Image 1 (tube, rainbow, N blue to C red):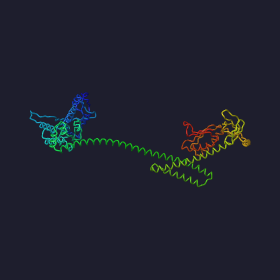
Image 2 (image 1 turned 45 degrees about the vertical axis):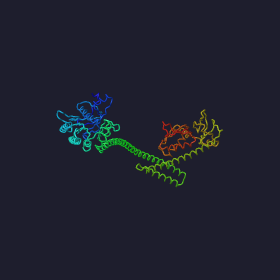
Image 3 (image 1 turned 30 degrees about the vertical axis):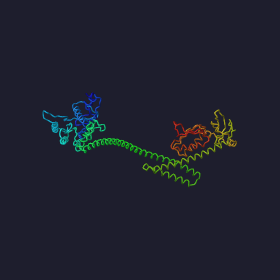
Length: 549
């Protein structure tokens, strides 16, 4: 049977409860499927807050089917049978199921339709409690509408006092308004398509339904004269109130959809706000980190600037420059230090941006000064090379036995031999060095005579040999001041040239690149330096300068 009805075992509660979604009448489902039609499922909710549901709507609109669906499915549940409804549905257990459906008139007992209904109401009021489910179809019919509606309203009040659960169908206007004034009672409407003039068989909980009596009469084909006469008899107010009720139902459905849409948009907006708040928090954290790094960089720049300024001041003193220039440089340094100390993570963005911009401008001026000095040194080196090249002529050909000297130096040696690769074995004061011929030039007669006047002692030659044997190709100046590092590099390059070392390495580290820049500016002025470049990235990269001699 469960397979036939596509039924399930819903969630069960021991207390009275009806919370059904997509519930269908099993026999109606089979009947319609044979005709190729589809049954319209119902959503029904009865809880302690809304215990009694009053269903109104047009005739043949599905009110009685809804009532019978509730009764049959609830009885099936309490018999332990699976029921055809949605898998999220919840069902409860009732102690009593009391039903008043259909015409119970009896000739034998001399009972009219209304009398039989009243006997049922009497029995229900006597035995009903807060665990009872009552199902009443066409509540109050069978007698004069005005008194029938009044008695029905009074009986319904008693059920409310007892806390009884129930589903009631009616056409009476007073019962439709009953739900507005009594807690625990809700209206329900069987929906009707006014445009197509057909029942939709859908239950909508929350508002009463219209009987659409005039519209249905017109559709069936009653003469318009009869319809107009009936409208006049019932009164324009009633007709308009029914119309207004339909408009209210339509508007309520519209605003409920609008409210659902707004709720979804508010939820999406809240998610966006939370994401933005999280982003703002992360930005604030990042801002502090950036300011901290900026301050560290500024302090590093200050340290480097101190070294550079001290070197500049020493150069000024050595050149016997004016004291005013020295004073001005120190004042600029003091101003720079004050600006760096004022940069703090708690400062506002505008102030910080201004200070960082000032630091950048000072750094640019500092770099410009270094660049200008490098240009001057480069021009001086070019002048030296031009002077050296002028001393040599294209006709100068170095041969074994010639007296030669290295370009840019004054020491004169003798060429002992030449090889096919353009390398010459030269003896300088008893020390043999292998040097590229391009780095040599012929000595002048005066230089030859001066060299003859000097003789190298055995001790001097021994010292030179020791230096050559103990020479290391690597020089480490990391952590030293600019002038100290430059002095060490000068002696290191001189020793390398002296011992004939073709390639050496200077370890200066990366840092801000100032030490690297100073060393390379000096190397550019040494004629015997043929090339210099960064070490391979695997062996130190920009932290090491490789020098070819």
